[in-house]
Length: 183
Ligand code: ADP
Ligand code: 5GP
Image (cartoon, rainbow, N blue to C red; front, top):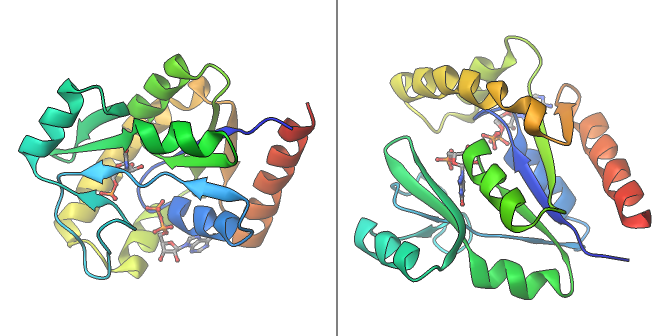
């Protein structure tokens, strides 16, 4: 069975991280840890949530070709370390949790990459961001505004999943993956 590069996107607060955490519980997947120049949030761990690096180091890594994809949003850079993904794909399905610009770059490098967009039921995004409690009201509004951009790219994705009931959404995604691995 071939290993899959699973690229998960969707507006901030729709539940991507929660869904990916559920997939990881099986031990069958390798999660790519991205590099970012943004500040660490409370509770985040360097090397686990992200590799928190300086702008200088990020720009140097771009020059060296060290990112499989990268993009700049929310005034910070975010990128996927190329070496980790290439190594892990030899033995695992690999998950990237990245935004659409990066997802499309990943698809160019890996045409077999599976692009999955998670969306929230109408009106749920703001409440979920509030419940998460990790951003200021101002930052929440910025993330909600950016949702239009993310959603405008949804037709480029292979699968769109509505994260209404979490268990159901995870089960649907697991079924999609199972089917793809059978092909
Ligand atoms: P993202 O990674 O997309 O930014 P998170 O996974 O951090 O989003 O989820 C945002 C918030 O929504 C968290 O507090 C999470 O517990 C909650 N959440 C995730 N999925 C659901 C769901 N299906 N129903 C209700 N709340 C959810
Ligand atoms: P956050 O700041 O909430 O952790 O992430 C903001 C956005 O950056 C999310 O849409 C997330 O998917 C995206 N992101 C995280 N890592 C990467 C990455 O390596 N590359 C790209 N292009 N986007 C990323």
